[in-house]
Amino acid sequence: MIWGSRAKPAIKSSAIKLWADRIAVLAPGLIAASLIAVLAGFLRTLPLLSVISPMMLAMLIGMTLTNVAGQPGWMNDGILFSQRRLLRLAIVLLGLQLTFAEVATLGAMGVVILAAALASTFVFTVHAGRLLRVEEKLAKLIAAGTSVCGASAVVAANAVVGGKEEDVTYAVACVTIFGTIAMFLFPFLPGLLHLNAGEFGLWTGSSVHEIAQVVAASFQHGQVAGEMGTIAKLSRVMMLAPLVLAIDLLSRRDARGGTGQEAAEASRRAPGVPWFVLGFIAATCINSIVTIPVGLKSNLMWLTTFLLTVALAAMGMHTDLTKLRRRGFRPALLAALASLFIGIFSLACIKLLD
Image (tube, rainbow, N blue to C red; front, side):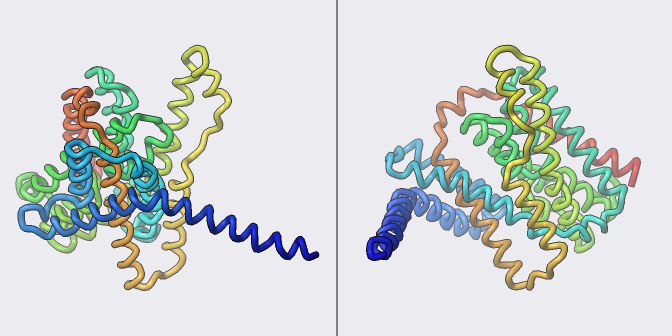
């Protein structure tokens, strides 16, 4: 009995030491990425930078620091933790911004337009990537980011695509840049295209990449357009889970068609959705059932954006610009074509079906 009573405090002390050691290893990189996120948030308050996503600013700052000044090895663990774990947690929290009741306000035709635009854009981008001779994994990441929700979709899709770090960074940069261009351009077009407020909101929500970009563009045309755009965009985000599952199934099918080790691994691997995508669905269910206080919901939205910004800062800190340059111009051209396609396809669907 005496030995047992002494063993328990020893085990507890050992566990505490392990946690302390782990925190000490993660802290430098995590703090660095967080400070960059805070700096990005401050820079976004400046007049000329207010239209740029804090996530994009954070990634650019991280890339600049790493490629100009270098990065000490003792930051690596914290940077990887921020880039992977924090980003996946942020994707889960995104689910708290949407309810199934809000999706229902779009109507059946609105949901059909969103689903058709998503699926068509993904298929178009992958096939266009083959024609442009863009590496298939990078093409799939650009397709996911363009068709669903920018950076979050790129990271979620990469859990089953298995692209390299520079592929993820390149895809995030592309969808952010072309989403920003769309954010500036779209508010000038509703009169020219004869779109009413609801139609403009649906078009913006179904074709602009990031949530913040949709909000900025759609509210330029009034409250009705802004609310419709936000709901359409969040409904499009909810389609991330079935898209990731579809990518996984298609990747396994393609691998089985090959030969050797790749085909053997594909036959053993069971289809699945990453845990954070399932968490996103669970969070949406919770938000649909439980009424979250407005103040708490606002804080959670801020936390989600901050975590995404920290994660993108870490991604920038882990990016070698030399490797990005080797990818060349063709992936950027593919992203431009994909963005143009989803805009035209969504507009055609709204004109024909809505």
